[in-house]
Length: 270
Image (cartoon, rainbow, N blue to C red):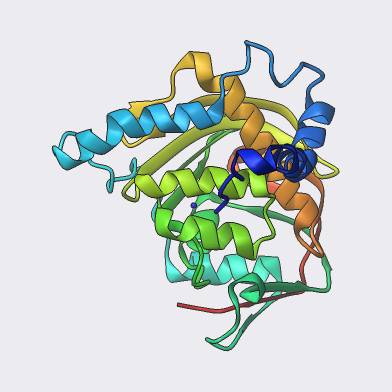
């Protein structure tokens, strides 16, 4: 889903390093919202994680919450759905040697144009068939609704989050955040949202519901969680070689995408 702060003798160096590591995240957040990140309206997501952990970890060990049971969205796919998704994507999948270092365990090359639509079954098939050894998602389901909302549920393999972040060149802010999730025992998650993408930027985002285990994220925290998700997703779009999402929406019960995607994806597989 790390860093040890310097002691008192290195306080000035630590402050400089902290701000340097957060520069990319902070600048992107500033561009997305003009509001001061330290505003009291912003619910600190790191604190949310800690609060959830305080409540959820004891509950898990007492058997009160089924962490390993993601919400069933009713999406069932076949082998044909998987083959159809591969055919629509059009890229090539290649396997890297087992000894490849974590930071090189997933590689993208080239770019090919796409203008296609994916059904809920095809999206779920593609998400559930990833073989990359550090892929942190298990038992995913993706459901695109006729009203343009999209739902997703899955189990998050917290033991893979840190390696995932390192392999995908995720900024240190999120590396630290993912490290905090290691205290959760592979929780089930659920989100329901609405929005679109134009030129690699999310437009009209509306996070309507989010859960970890059986605990619903409180309304008071939803805006901050939405901001974090937008920043994380947009950063991922920017960091992926060959990926250029000119337009993406969830109209007609499908995910519709126009742009370019990597021509080759190489991974170390499990």
